[in-house]
Length: 494
Image (cartoon, rainbow, N blue to C red; front, side, top):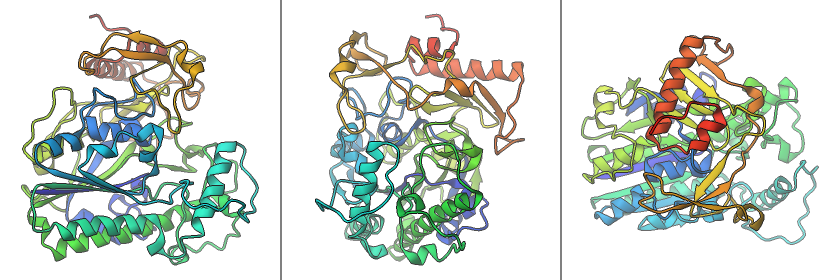
């Protein structure tokens, strides 16, 4: 048996043909849908990038205990478990966050890995005094990233020279070289269509809008902020995203072509997934992290081909999450799941739409804690403006691009073990959030009646029901007591 996971970053389901979009050019995603089970109720768990990938390894929620982080010493890792049980695992990716302080423990869990350089301000090409002219954004970090990104783009003049294309080439090289062997798992992961939405003119030509673009860095790289720009600019940015999405579609098609050519459908599982979506003006917001995790961000595309059941061109309504994917892969290769893994194998869900859960949690550390049962989405905001108490529980005190500072660590304490830390006590470090969630308040939506989440419900009975589900899931995840306090929720009895 073999397995391929094609993972995109920031893949918006609402802009894919299989999910009802009629204006983007995504014929290969439509072709993918015709060869797989398509999931309509896949929800994120922990966001954004590395929290989602920690879930992909561990099969349990990250965001209640920890912000952006590496794998912890006590974490189970699906690729490493496979490796230890005789399944060869390989990661091919252009996702640069794996090579930063906050992601540096992931890639070495695989047998082998390969990193393609050049995405989103990756410190790759060196030009000491670049001839780059643009108006700098408001904060210094984004200025540095955009300047480095502008340097990197000078070395990408064709689609084939962009990181996405080179990543897919390396992944397909591995598939072709190992087509006759058995027991391997390939994670072929591209950072696209994450912002910046940089691609070549041939893809932009698919979406002509007659709009005179602003300076290059604002042409395809929205800020994480409320929308203040014109409707024409918003549409232009959607076209820029769509252009990069169509490039993703091209390379997705090449994987399908290769599976056809090598007759891999008979013995190879294919999973196509993403970590989260991206707001392109919906709810009057750009991007993610700052605002609530609306369904445009949280309800993600998922496609699975399982050669055992051979289900294709069928929809699945069961509520599933990222935490189910490691369990699915372990079960597929006949490897036992560790006791701390909370996700469930999706074999029967693919085959017969068998449910694996009644409700699901999702969120980002320090923001709303969200719960859905597939019909309702309940977003619980911090009860107080100061968003406290909030702590990181960790033995790996690093942020995305740096260590926790001495100032942060001076108030750290040693906390007792959680149920999943394998007897290890952990540091409890005062935490911080991406943005302030309190001003948004609690939000409740009926996403069947109101799929765009435009009309929040005021219904005490439904809110109480969803609160009960939320508390039960938090308790099952051994949530820190401070999370209940932060949210103004009842603390369950021991």
